[in-house]
Length: 221
Image 1: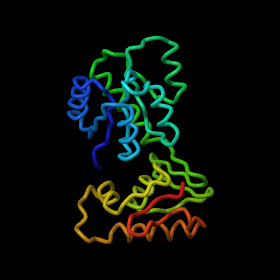
Image 2 (image 1 turned 135 degrees about the vertical axis):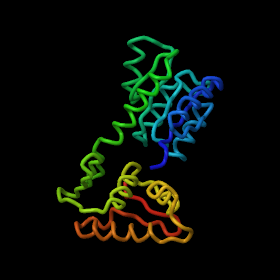
Image 3 (image 1 turned 90 degrees about the horizontal axis):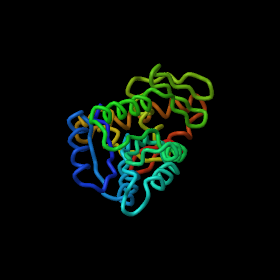
C-alpha cells in the first residue's frame, strides 16, 4: 500500500520542518499548510489520512478549524497546543478533535499517538447506509447480506467508502490499490468496477456505485 498521508497545519516553519522530518523518517507522506485557510483547502483537496493541527494559527483559532473539518470529514485530528488546562482539553475533544499533544512533546510520543489514530481508522467498521465494511474481518454486508468480493474489489470498496461522494479517478484508484503499477491504458480498474457494480446489483444495491463519465467513480453519499 502507498504511504499514509499526514497534513501538518502549522504556521511555525521550524516546527513544521521538524514534524515533516520525524514523520517522513517514520514512513509517512507529509504535506504542510502554514495557515488555517490553506489547511482547510489542502484537507478538502488532498484527503489526508490524518491531520496534525496547531491550535494557535494566525488566521483562525484551531478550534474553529476542527469544527469546519468536522462538517464534512471524519479524518483523525491531533491538536498540538501549549494550553495545558482541563477546560481546553475538554473543549477540543468536544469540538471533534481525536487527540491532543501538549507542546513541547517528544517525537516518540507524537509517533505513538499518530499510529494509534491511524490504526483505529484502519480497523474500525465503516458504514454508509445499509452498506457495512469490516476491515479486520474483510467482510462486507449490504442490508444484512454478505457481499462476496475479491481482494481487490474489497480494497476498492474500502477506498471509496472512506470518502462517500468523492469521485476517485481511475489513476487514483490504480495508484492506491495497485501502487501505480498498472500499465498505461490498462482497463483493469474498469473491469474491477464492473464486477463490483454487478455484485452490488445482485443485492439490490446497483445505484450505490456512481460513474462520472470521463472522471472516475464514487459511492453515493
